[in-house]
Image 1: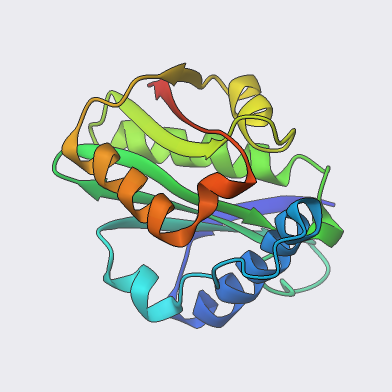
Image 2: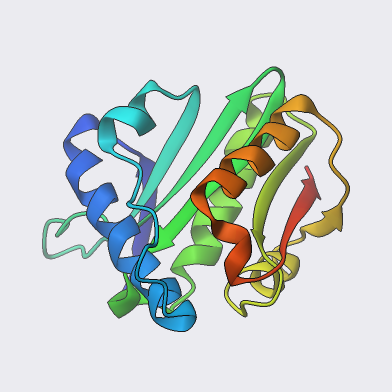
Length: 171
């Protein structure tokens, strides 16, 4: 199956919410987290500065069936931050997440950024270890934006499920 990565369109909004909810279900199951925060709404995501890329199956003989994954990169105060990467679990372990990360890194570089950060769970195999395999390394907080993300994570109760880390990739 060939995967095409492209900029998201408003018509993709409902699907990105569904993709995030389905991908989050893996964390809900892992942590037995009955109170996991809901996915970002399409309206919220569209109001944030940055960009969203989607991955969709692309068959020469058939039209796309719609997105199966997406990556959302925030651009705030001169910083690029990988806010969300989600792939439908039924499409997991096929390299789609890696393709989306690579496309996000390329687009971020093309937009003039030298680094990109993210925050994730250190001990979840498809979180920090995956991002490390994509070129990210653990780093210390170095901006007001990143410090504010810790406040958001605290308010959402994310730390109760394990240690979270900041990671950075040089572009």
